[in-house]
Amino acid sequence: MVVAYNPPHEQTASVYATALAQFDRAVRYLNLDDGVAEFLRYPRREFTVNFPVRRDNGKVEMFTGYRVHHNTVLGPSKGGIRYSLAVNLDEIRALAMWMTWKCALVNIPYGGAKGGVVVDPKTLSRHELEGLTRRYTAELIPLISPNMDIPAPDMGTTPQVMAWIMDTYSMTVGYSVPAIVTGKPINIGGSLGRNEATGRGVIACMVEALKGHGSGKSATDTTLVVQGFGNVGSNAASFAHSLGYKVLGVSDVDGGLYNSKGLDMPAVRAYYAEHGTLSGSKLGDEVTNMELLALECDVLAPCAMESQITGKNANKVKAKMIVEGANGPTTPDADDILLDNGVFLVPDILANAGGVVVSYFEWVQDLQAFFWDQEEVYRQLQRAMARSYYNTEATAEEFGVDMRTAAQITAIKRVADALETRGFYP
Ligand code: NAD
Image 1 (cartoon, rainbow, N blue to C red):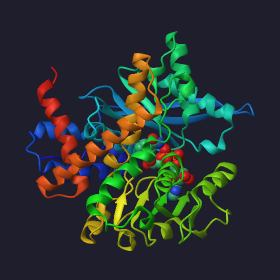
Image 2 (cartoon, rainbow, N blue to C red):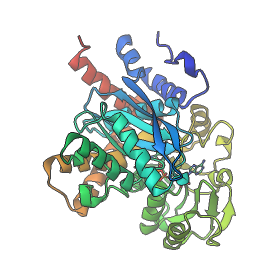
Image 3 (cartoon, rainbow, N blue to C red):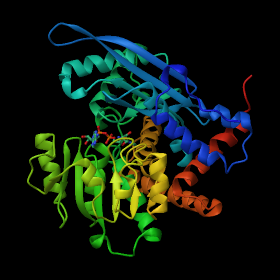
Image 4 (cartoon, rainbow, N blue to C red):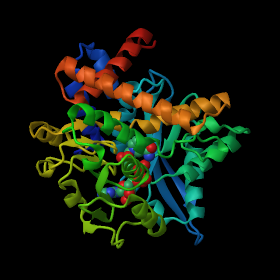
């Protein structure tokens, strides 16, 4: 009998509960040993740090950060670092678990991890952000290394933040270690194509999904709405636009923009780059995020954050296909409603895996000190995404399940098989 891992200090409705509910749904189709299934529900390590940062006004302020290693059966753990006021251990634990399944699903030799600091990075000066990043990294030193755990960017963190992590780690060990982190700037060992990899991967999945589950419309007649205009959302919207798809709506935390004729994406990007918000652009009608999710369109790509499509608004979704750029944007009760409504959903651990795929390429390039050109990165990314998409689709057909359950079945089976081969220590 499998019971929820729910430590007494955190018994509230949680993102981790969503991750566990998805896991339980998939595990029913696998004939796993009870001990193996139970083991896979638990994070291996959870690290909480409280640390000081001196603000520019001279005052010292305390911050809290986390790093969770969910599972390391397939290799070193891999996962982003998030800077957000919404960060908490429950959320990081869920994101770490999803990283385990994502890496296994796309067949790269990594386990899953995630980290975060409870901070709104927009409230810090560049100097304060650097101080916070360096001190958080220093606190993580016992847990990270190119062979143990390799961080990457996530919400609220950037290539520059990765550069400070790389420098802090390198200064501590006494030599330069580019492979300690991925998503770095190119000039210190980053990979060409990493920045846009997640967004490109989302659209690569959408293109494959439309072939078998679309209405047969041409790209120019196919409409897309994207929630979130950060690394994932802006690159997904721009790549789709460059392939000829009609992007009707985009949004950021302040709200969205809608144009029934299709948005001029280069103009939207230029406005966002100048103003740091989509508000006030006049490039489309202003809509709220909730209105955006309910827009009439062929494909909806939630690329902002978790729990955006829930039991409360899933019935309002008019898109016929959802491609999840964000991690955990759809709750399990919303999954059921969407399934009943015939919406074809490409799940997060598949659709947004392009980021970790190119992060893996970056790590490989750093370890070999041999760098690929952009064409090679894009070619290998496309191959990995298409292969993973069709593997998942084949599992969905084999078990007669939806794509989320199929992705979880595929991933959990790979980790469980490796665990059986390795055996339990001691
Ligand atoms: P980001 O910080 O670059 O962008 C986040 C975007 O979401 C911003 O436009 C922000 O304004 C918007 N946003 C924040 N809160 C919102 C809200 N409540 N409603 C609507 N919009 C909101 O982050 P990102 O790296 O693009 O990550 C977005 C999502 O994709 C996260 O779930 C992340 O875990 C996931 N993801 C990121 C990567 C990556 O490579 N960066 C890879 C895989 C998955």
